[in-house]
Length: 145
Image 1: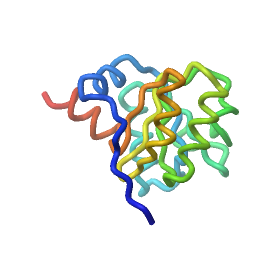
Image 2: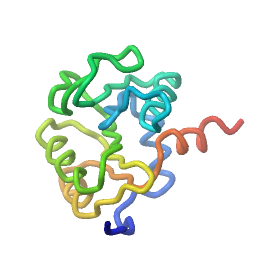
Image 3: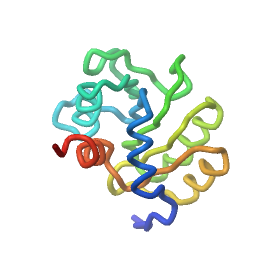
């Protein structure tokens, strides 16, 4: 396994603005298992008022939300694509986001880095965040009172 250092990332102020202005999040790899981080993050974001679209190859519903098989199956606008899949899959997710259009941000979770994919996302006008957790970042900026 190759560990890649994130060389393409938005600055902290931009990460805060992405979270502040976004309303919907597609969670790629959202597990139905409540002990998995993807499920915990999805629940947290739902509790914070985001519209969450779980993307998972099985299940019809996760956390009371309709499950989609792919990003392209979501018939609504998506602000953030939050990835909980291996780095090798990130390029495919970015290509799907380009095809879908109107995606504001590609976000990969802690430990997930693919600079080539993020460069492609940037070239198509998307903001990029790698190796950060949406739950941790939201908490850092908005739950610290």
